[in-house]
Length: 254
Length: 254
Image (cartoon, rainbow over all chains, first blue to last red; front, side, top):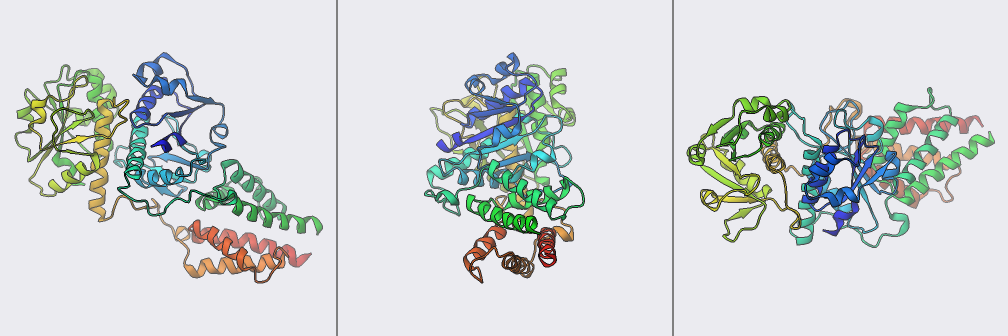
């Protein structure tokens, strides 16, 4: 169950302080404690404390960040949440499959996961979802999918707890045993490392005249999604950037 | 999914009308609609309507009963909920196992199930639990098991929905179903298409003088694994090969 402390619940620009309190309560009932608030409208706030109802410890330890990057740069797995269908399709898992992947990922004690929850009114932006390796989609009633923020957190944290219990009990052995002694180069890349690669890729594509518009937003979104699906390791990023550097050299020479 | 209409959510003596509204909302997000209120303190009430937030239809159809017997007499399966340990031990299931049993039970269209939720302050009495075939116990954090009423309803209704979906699909809900409107370009690439990309990549790397041995077996194995992890679509392969073609052109020109 210690793994639950490697999982951050990240609320992106929450509007209502009461929701922050309800989220803290939902988290604590399932044994999670690491809450991160990105640019909250009002925090700290008495309504948050009131609705936390015994989970004030989660609020007291909450980290407040200015930007999403600050919140997730150190994380080796970043996932978003959504109940909506989107035009752009990200790789999507239901809460159960997602919890399985997250608990498996955090079996390595140095690895941290972040689960992003969007604004009450409008959710996560496409740019925010671009930073996620996959999206959790709660299979809500298509005619009424209006889960409130705390309910969404409650469901997903419940699945994490169920999965953590299963793992502790050895009841449901995970299909792939996590490798606990990961060589440094085989560890999953952090978000900052993944972004470094994507920036490099974009620069090389511009230098190649491959892109017609600059910045190539749509293309980069597709490439971001492609590489996020691959769960790149440090070594893989080294290889990809090595290839890009080789292209860069040829371009400079010619 | 029709089975969900054979399941009643029964709130026993709810105190706060706001909670009744939140329960209605939680139910509707998961496709349940049959709410029964046993001796509610205040109902109808504007706070219930306010918190229902679009799920007023559930409140309008709610049945109000004087006694628990009236609420459950027609039901062929009655289960209670609890987060507490009790001295008397009833047969207990976690929400997943319970949902499985309930969905199985309601596969017979004439059979109805009721799930009882107790008072906000004190839950169900022992006498009320005596009327249940089993008890659902949410595996909450033992140090803080204070789920609010709507959260408990949300979790259990979520499990019912997951189970109903699994039954409808004939699939385990664990499966990672990408939710997509699969246009032709979004379909997963075939093995031949993936191999075509990797051959192209190898040729370009050789032309770039990126590789020191030819064929670059170890490198290509790593790149194969990398791109296999990404589950490439047809469109993604087109993009990747487009980039390679652009590099090829520059190499030919210089």
